[in-house]
Length: 347
Image (cartoon, rainbow, N blue to C red; front, side, top):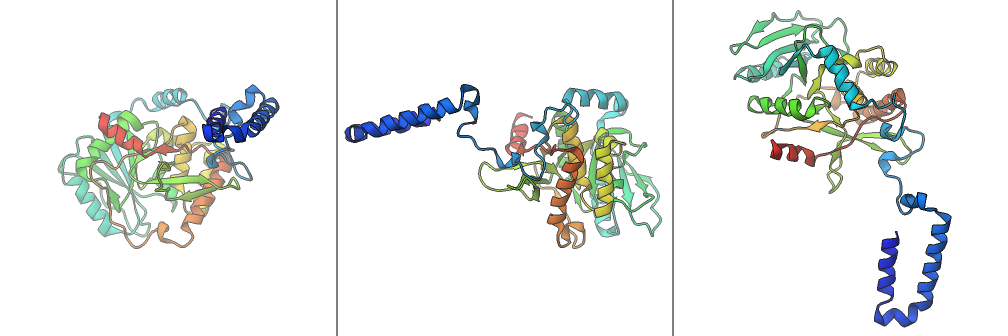
């Protein structure tokens, strides 16, 4: 503020204005002195800085990063130690695809055929979560390139089942996906290595979304702003996202917040992906990582699906606020889209 005030005074004291503004300059300096007396030095950082919208107060919840309670945002080092203690014995240099399907045989057939048509060095297994409850699941098989394709039929109709930390998983990295979207095989190995090097502490995937605070303090789910300097995102959708199995494990824990999230997902039949993003950011204090690879991911875009239903965005916004209430604050962390390009340059 003082710098801008000095600049203003310098402009006012230019030769053609000097004589006519002597009194005005003295008056401005007097006002500045009064302001500094009212706002002591310890509060100078607050002068001239309004609170960002993302930290708006009101009837909603502030970001967890504003809180000092250690039980809100856990240190990253503690998360890594706990994850390694529990899952250190799993394979680190390969990944598993957990693919959810529901009565879309054409999309499932195309996606599986594409992923199995060529050798993907680090792909260990594909597990198809078979939600066709009125049909028997197909038999498991091994592909031409040695990839096991296993079908798992859940015991109940719940979106949470896709996030279940299957005890049969052999890898730390799980690529969550749906039957209608996939990375091209030539890109999948690259994306996995991005996860290994930069993303194992965060959700890492192809489709990003935003969570913005309204002036009321409530949170709004949206497709993110395309305006300059607003290229941030806070969530990665789990229809194509790498996650550490430890996030899935915590999502299914007895933690009261995680339990409340799972119950609400069953009640609303929506938002399991938002819930997992909450868990990941709460545990690590880190935001997600957007990685689209060299080519665009493939989205078969079927006409059906929850996201096509009327009121979908409003329902997703409600999930943000229900989950923030569960944690007592908003754990999601904004990340800049430019980060993706930087990672590609340096790798």
